[in-house]
Image 1 (tube, rainbow, N blue to C red):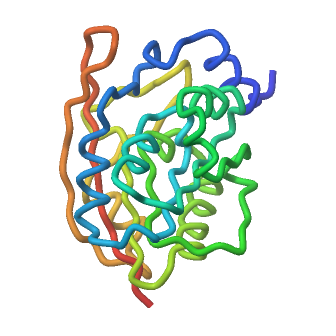
Image 2 (cartoon, helix red, strand yellow):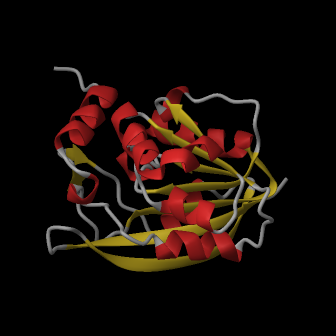
Length: 206
């Protein structure tokens, strides 16, 4: 049977609560710290790719950021986030779309992705992702991307994933980007297990 990404992720979010998925973080501290380290103003355009019902958007709103986009293939995940945020959800732009189909006239100061990119396993999809970041990130904008590290799991949510290092990410984003920093995280899942992540920050250069 052909894999249907939207059907897969809708099933995940229909059957699990927000704190029952392995990538759940009560406090996305590393993502917040890396965004703050970019030193952009509160009017900066920020997109959280594959954000689902992550609590990153909550934290960014609390910090006063005003132009936040959350994109996810799962409508259920976005609806859960909107219900949680209640009236504050009106201050966020929600996009229910497969990232591979995403097109916009907007340009972003920060492109954030934690745990979405490593689900892309074909060269075609990976290349398209890289080109999308190049296209939609402003000059001197920042790419903040978290993936499974080389010590991370080989599968997640029943899907094969790709694992990355600082060097392999650097090669993918070698043209048009400048590597700023890299750090690793041992993420504690809700199931009392750990997953190894690597975060990389790049600046868009022209």
